[in-house]
Length: 332
Ligand code: A2R
Image (cartoon, rainbow, N blue to C red):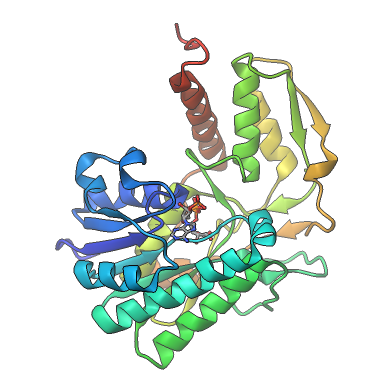
């Protein structure tokens, strides 16, 4: 980014990625504003100078989204607000479509009418590759897209909507198609954070020494959330309007290896148990991305080794339990 002060607007600023994005943008001298929902900004633990510019707003409110963009008139918009969990998207189908698709429409219209010069990043998902037959190669941006969940549908249709606004309405939009990412602060609705949470509880003597897992044979392309937010910044600095970029490490790791690493951080003798409720009807054996386009187009490269990511995630879970005050600090 040019070093002049940029006005940056983030929807979903209090979410997992939003918080890391703020941490990355503040040292760049950006003026940050954005939205949080359903949490109130004052309950999100933001520093006072950040919290004052975060508004409690449901992205489904057309009026609210227009008013806030009119006020902020941002240079950059990162659109992160979404129902981000596939299981929840099945349980709340209408809410998912209203939030992820109509919410995106509300934002695009608000930008078109009030801040048409802004650069906007739409965060999509590798879930829309929806592989039906197992493959052994890395997925490229032009690979076949097939939505197999309400979540994937809203990301696929959101991409199409963004491309329409870029190509026909002339808005300056870049699309990040993000593969799984994890790191400190992720909620236990996602696999690595779920295991880190379980193992931290075991470490603190709050749970019996058994980790419940689903299918750990599958291989996934995981990135560190801090690398991912750098990719998002690189995409707004150098990404091409209307283009889709995979955001991924380009390496696949089996969930078994991830589990072994997390277990190795604990001092307890832990056993692993398969919980049938965590098994899926069909699991894609390999989900691997090709990141050549973003590397060559923006110079971004993932830097943080997965071991560091998992260590930081685990340490954060221990810290959370210590802060809750329910257990004595292990260092005491
Ligand atoms: O689902 P919640 O209760 O954690 O709230 C999420 C929030 N959100 C909304 N914001 C405004 N209006 C809504 N109607 C609405 N519904 C949910 O957006 C959460 O605070 C934020 C999204 O953050 P996370 O769920 O923590 O997702 P993460 O990992 O930060 O992903 C950011 C983006 C999403 O678009 C994902 O679909 C994509 O990256 O992978």
